[in-house]
Image (cartoon, rainbow, N blue to C red; front, side, top):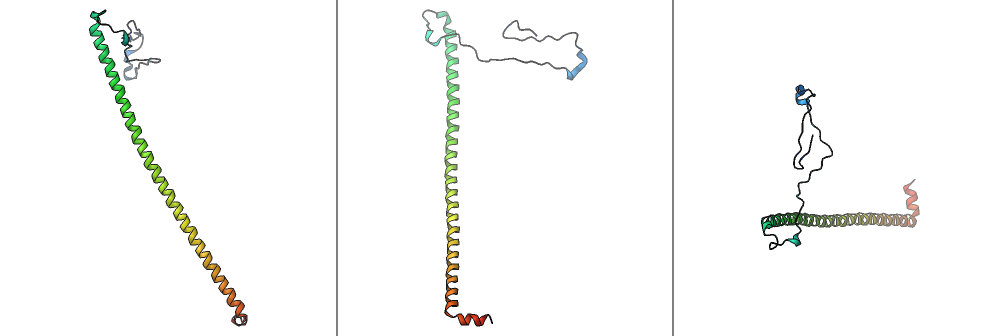
Length: 146
């Protein structure tokens, strides 16, 4: 493998390797970094067509690429903003639903507690009535057990 030109990689096979291996032949590459971004060589603030009229096409190309990058960046930013807005709306709805659910659970728990309290009060009243009947007519109660 050689890289005499930074734009190309040339892979040369070793003639000593058996080429009859067919599909089991493989090429492995590691520790490769690829950058598809051209490195800007023009400082935006130093563009001067009076001093460098021969570079006007280069300046125009640079401005088009820069404008395209700004538009792409704004597009990504807009899409991210929309996603955040949608997620915020979803989270707000979810919190509202959870709060309603908790309210219903509390209401149900309070209804259950109220029902238990009423049952205990009724049981207590029946106990008092039974005791008052038993105390008032002790002889009648004794006769019931005979």
